[in-house]
Figure (cartoon, rainbow, N blue to C red):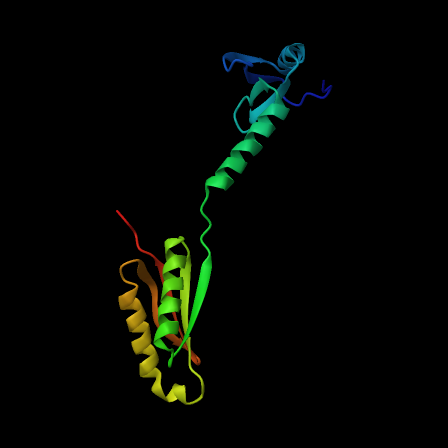
Length: 165
């Protein structure tokens, strides 16, 4: 038991969750000690402070257990990237589009990037046409989060899973 009592009286809740009312702190400590439990301060800002008689170790264990359960249930969204070039072959295009579909259906966001090399820089409109083609062919399973945007020698676009009702 703690010999230094900073608060003369507290509002106490017993081990069954019932209000004991406002009682002296020493009496609450004795009651908790007799029950083999701890006196835990629930709300320090109230006047008088609210305390509860409980097994603090068990309480902490249950809180950790709840946190782990919540962590298991949360869905972590990853960012995947699919890279294209302006003169991509049809088979490569279809393969990359299929990968994009798999990523989107897996719940991930997809960053579609298109890189211009050498003389391809002179024909940026071909890059934007390819991006439009990707948007139209992925419209049934993906929505555009960020429209195609030029950054240096690259064009980027973000796709997210389409919301289903």
